[in-house]
Length: 288
Image 1 (cartoon, rainbow, N blue to C red):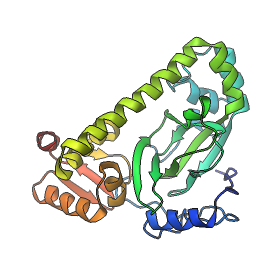
Image 2 (image 1 turned 180 degrees about the horizontal axis):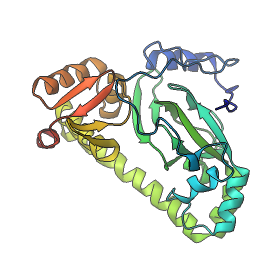
Image 3 (image 1 turned 90 degrees about the horizontal axis):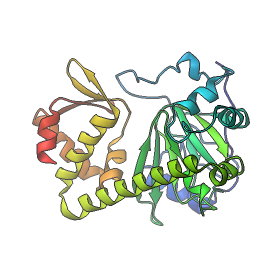
Image 4 (image 1 turned 90 degrees about the vertical axis):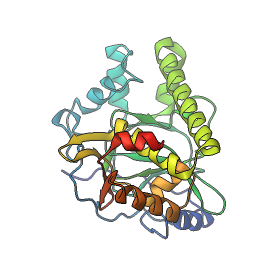
């Protein structure tokens, strides 16, 4: 499969690069300068990913691939067929490598993305380089929808966790749809309302639960949303470093590693090269 064009990032300032490098543990794969593309290493992990190969109908080179993806993405399913086809025709496939950034804080908020393959982590970075993960986005899920309301610049980092394809739909293309088609406006409102409820739930966990309970709750949620049943338990179908988990529960990588090791000793899970196999979901839910 031929490589598709990669996005360029002329807006990244040197101080952003330094903060990103610190937040990502010195990983130069996405800590790029203003004149460079993100560079990425090879995908790790012992288990194959469920989305390691694109289905034929979602192949970026298929004439109907873009429309097929929109047709199975809840944000767009209520649109008339002709309008959906028009949006698909004017959208663009983008291909991303593992640990590549889709956008940085400060980039123009000028498009909505729909993931066709892979996983994307949405996070915020503090001035001193600390990272807080807001959301994990998988196949058939959109991100960047805040540009349809009042956002003009990105406030988040969108980083690819494994090789991915995503559909880029310009803000200018979707704004008339938002205004003229109430079902689409309602779908956007529901999406953003769901994001808010999720953020409130996680904030409640931060205030009232210990790191141990927060990590157990996170793993249980990931098992339900990204899990795949295997003979040995529930495999989380995404590659997550300990820092990725720590960013989702408001903890440090060191504390997260210690807690994961505790769960491993207790027979709750197994870890092979950033792939987590949940062996006792009920046990994790009891801790959460």
